[in-house]
Amino acid sequence: MRDAAEAARAAIDRLLRHRLMRNRSAEVSAESALRGARASAALEGVDVPLADIRAGSVEDPVVQGALRASVALGSLVETWSRAPGQVLARLHVLAAADLVDSAELGRPRPHAGPRLSGLFTLVTATSTVPAVLVAGLVHGELAALAPFGTADGVVARAAGRLTGIDRGLDPKAVSVPEMGFAELGREAYAAALAGYASGEPDGVAGWLVHCCRATEHGAVEGLAIAEAIVRG
Image (cartoon, rainbow, N blue to C red; front, top):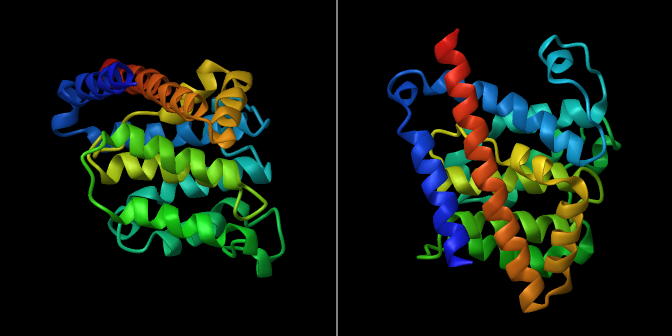
């Protein structure tokens, strides 16, 4: 697991050293948010062409929810480590706005209470654990717990990415970890998540290694975005 975490960190560092990051990182981040939303929706089974999303012609509620959540991450970074419950509620409102009645938005189900409390402790505490692993734990816990009952996958991936931004893994939000998970495949994602949900040490470790590999892929996607912008 240590090797996988170090490889993920090295991949992100290569991306952050790209010359475009000195004064045009916002362009990469905006494109990363778009591609990340598309990939997150694809992991939910709604796979649509990026060009259609870019053109604004996709009305699917899962895609639109993923887009809203992805775009909002920058405004939620400062609050995440102080009030994670507030941020999760906001992410659910954004992700599920067109999927459930408004009265259900941002309201975790009763069964989620105890485990959410533990998750909030993880998010708010300082730690020497590599940020990519903390992000994987946040992602895995939310996806396995499914606290809201709708759009939990989109919320989990957004929260995982937010953790990576907040903890300095990708402070400029220029990688695309969601694309990494999508490239590794929905079946592999589901299997790794099932391993995490089992609570078995090997299953949890397998999930975290999967997250590290997805992070590496996401960094490569970020580099591709940066190079495309350079080429114009």
